[in-house]
Amino acid sequence: MLRREDYRVIHALAQRGLYCCDIAKEVGVHPRTVRRALARGGAPAPRPSRRGWRLDPYRADIDQLLAEGVWNAVVIVRELQAKGYRGRLSILRADIRPKRALRVRRATVRFETAPGRQLQSDWAEHRTRIAGEDTTVHFIVNTLV
Image (spheres, rainbow, N blue to C red):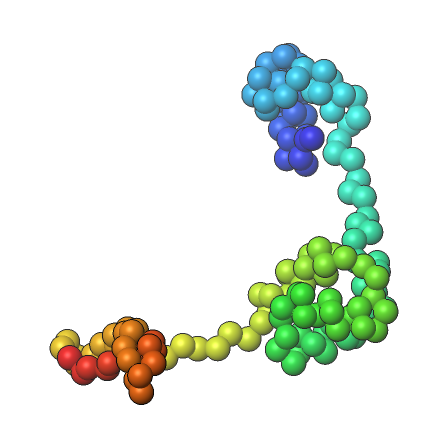
């Protein structure tokens, strides 16, 4: 399928006098596709997207959940399904995706220690007898190194 810039390139090369087969090699399509693009006169008008029409009654609920910090699409779709939403998760994800850039990000504060001043944690389990019964004992050892 040709993109808008492909149509522009095809028409620009045709105005320079190139043959259809040469234009096809340049763009990477079949010569018949070039002839059809030239006959059409330009790129077709984009079709309006129908995606999200089931979400329209729930836009306020989605925006409220996003404002509350709920960005997980699975959680949001469960909330909407409780209110009667019958659409799919993929439609909701596609609707939320552009809004993720607006999400407030929390700053992360790094904590670094001087060399040789860090905590080392070791975890282990050990089988032993306590009160005459075989038992697994779990323990952790923290050492400041």
